[in-house]
Length: 257
Image (tube, rainbow, N blue to C red; front, side, top):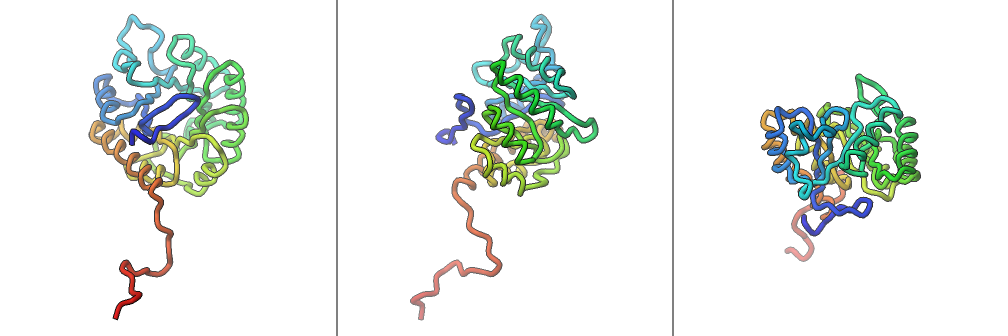
């Protein structure tokens, strides 16, 4: 898949699997799973990971900046003010001007606060951030985020950490038809077939954390996700046959005696 790059805001990525860094048993397992996944983009929660005090052991010590694009995220932020604060902190530490923007609206479902998300995204874009917003599967919200300058959108497949897979494929398809930027399916993937299905629908990439970190064998699951994303992308580009109600003979019968 090296000849099928993903381009976002002038950056080029060969892997279409993006991974998070939470919920692992330790930094070594995190590092091994990321390597097995083949991912180039790795998300780091600014408020949950110590990235400011470099005198202490740090997750970033295990991630080669020449190999990975570190994507700070505002996970755990429930207000616009918190999301802005942690996005600015991530940039101030020199990690990146990229930010995966999350403004969570509810502790139980972890669904996004879309009004707060649009407000925070508008402010950060004016400040020069490259904002990749985690949103719900609402095509209208996705279009508004693109209209204000987001170079990609990241709709959920299902609630964060649920492992339910894509709950509303029709909304995802509408988003893919509505926006003219990359669509990265984020949250809710449970296994490799979920990732493959997202890519077969036409998603440009898939981001996941719990599905790998919470697996019985995270290294094997990371490998499975790598191949799931790749085969899903290949199937999408190949173009599936149309669904038909009745059978169609595999061999032609014209000209047969």
